[in-house]
Length: 258
Image (tube, rainbow, N blue to C red; front, side, top):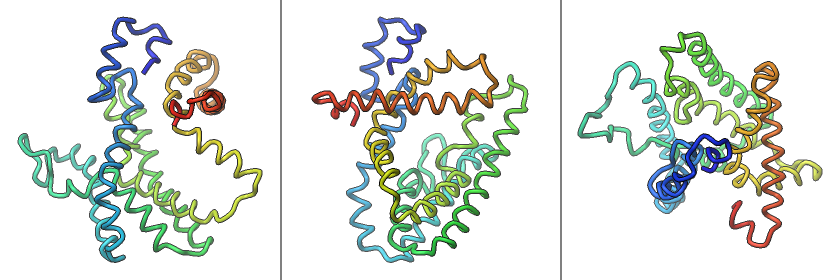
């Protein structure tokens, strides 16, 4: 949100309007805040979903997940077919609308936690297979766009390969969920930093866009892209953790970083 003022590419007089605008949506200078609005939506629907998950059968939950998975193809359907299954100018609520969105990941995670109790070997085999199946189209679509004429590419096309509610990303997420479930107990030396990162993650997310912009000015153009990306990723991660940790130690700081 404050990154434009840090990088001197926004008029200082617009800060109040940008802040007030956050009441109804994120702005162009704080695009990462879309995630917060998404989380609010998930939390708002949880009191409805949670009692249902306590009473629904395993088969019923699988049916929900199956229909939700069908909705992940909607983004690609719009590219080739436009409005589909009931969408129109006066009706954006298509036939599968109420099964779509991020709530599907919540139900999927609940199903895995409740019903999936596979051996480590089977979990890794299925998990890696699903991840690879999802990764291949993600990589292929992105590389296809990368080799297009820049004049023909827009941001929506660039984002398409890794849109979160698409079948390829859903498969990768499922694969990772399954693999993570095999982690029963980690060594103490590993658990402490993971626990710290978990506690600091919300604050790290909120500030990462500012830190990323700073490091981009330092590294982009000074080293090959293949090197700059991992270097910036590590630098941003470490810096955000350090700053968030310091803020969390200040009295009342936890209300700032979450």
